[in-house]
Length: 251
Length: 333
Ligand SMILES: Nc1ncnc2c1ncn2[C@@H]1O[C@H](COP(=O)(O)OP(=O)(O)O)[C@@H](O)[C@H]1O
Ligand SMILES: [Mg+2]
Image: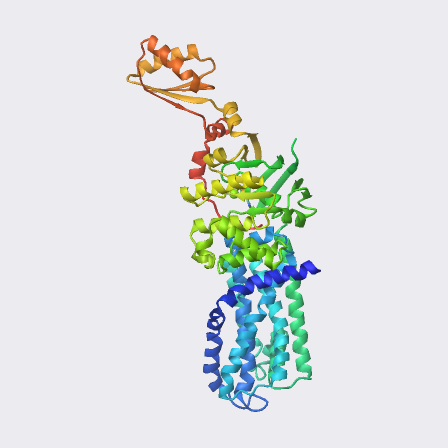
């Protein structure tokens, strides 16, 4: 167990180091969510949010979206390392196979924190009202979700090691339906029944709903519990398949 | 016999490609003693990398067993990994990492604490001459600089057994000489056991004390370069004459003097292949002089490992290396 912890820490800090050395890379990847915020918010009718503000409704959605974009693409880093030979070098080292994926997935939390902070700071001057306790709990749930999503992205990278196009094809095909069906950018409540049913099967829907509740200061609610469960399910699934895939690489 | 470092028995690996079975390695029995410097030599696709990948726990054998540094590769891969160093065909360092950071992570991966990893990284930066770019990002390094970093990473835990897969591929002659120098120094200073693969004859010849010739997944010869050459190929004497008929007369004369010589006559050039040819050449020239066959030019060449390979397989390793598909990046299966 202790080797699992230290091995995971080794992988985690190796992954984190380029981010720390070059923090602008994280900020640069933030441009897209900020543009979305600037362009979408004026379009949203004010009646959406529980307390009437479009930003209160939209900001949590954008927070989840930027996590979704960044984290789902993270497997491409592993794919590149598989191609250059540096992943092979890690596989020959005594590092535990589960740590090779868990350490990487855990690192996804860090850019997510930074991105959320930037979004919040950027929107407060425009009237976004921050409920700190709720937002912090929201970050915990999102962190759990992020780890699962990161692990899934790495699994996809391991599965498409000989065909890079496959990684991007699958990632791009999945991300937009997931995003739209979760009501991240536009509400699905008024959509047709099939759409609402599809949304019900999307774990992201629960995460987004929970984030909205939490960022608006509503902590003890079924919505939050639902989001927490969805995040844990995604994390468990991601780590399970990811660990298996990583074990299978050297078989 | 010296202490054993590697022992394989019937080591075999098959791949299935489009429902067809590729027998990459077929029943390899190999024994490497402590302190040996062994080159696996063979054309592209011979099974060298696959062998190395099984010995380094990257691939599971289809059949057979391999014990590396005292541990079974399938039963206890982690113990094998801790004991060995591996420098693969690709580049081991992450492109977005800095040189020093990557060495530090590598030390941590082999169980060193932070202070020990930093000290060791600094040591290797010094001994492999990485100082000038130690704080640069790997993607900004040249091919030769990356290869030096690969070596440094492979040596981070001072392994007693080091594997190198095509270490000099893609290096210019200067860097190739540099690498050979490092390999020799490792042997001399630390007695590290080394197994390297190559399809460069000169590299195997100059560097290794033992050459294992592999073809189609099988060992076809295994000895010191010197003994391989004397066993499988003789010296080559090339005699040139002014006229075709002189060459023909010379052939009769040569066959009278040198028993067991193989001759090859093309126009006014006569090639003679025989053991101890270098010693026999003066006598040959005197005899030709006596019989009044004027020799225009003479050249004596020691056999190369290519001659060995040619005699063993009927194919030239040089041609195969030149025409064989370029080394593609190999990816864990
Ligand atoms: N992952 C793989 N999948 C399918 N075939 C492979 C794989 N790796 C190697 N081979 C095949 O096995 C044979 C031996 O390859 P390899 O060990 O790489 O040769 P070498 O290193 O001597 O050039 C070749 O025919 C190669 O195409
Ligand atoms: Mg090879």
